[in-house]
Length: 121
Image (tube, rainbow, N blue to C red; front, side):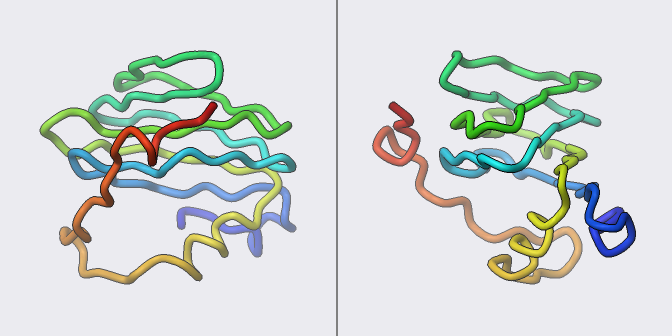
């Protein structure tokens, strides 16, 4: 966490993400949270109900509040570096609760992301 809701009065949180090749979350939505991503390095494929987009370094991706189903995946062979902002804060607590701590530079194996896992409509 770069800054958590505890430090912003619950207004927002800024989360640094390192996404290994082949990884990314499954389809999901946040009805009460606006989520945005800034791609610092690498490229990632974002998919929403509106289509698929490859976001490269320097790109800003906004997922508006309201429950737009979305997911992303690193389809490259290199690590992707993202900054994720959530407004209001709170999602960072979820990541800490469900995440598995690992040493810096180590990653868990990617989940299986077959056609059924990425089906959003």
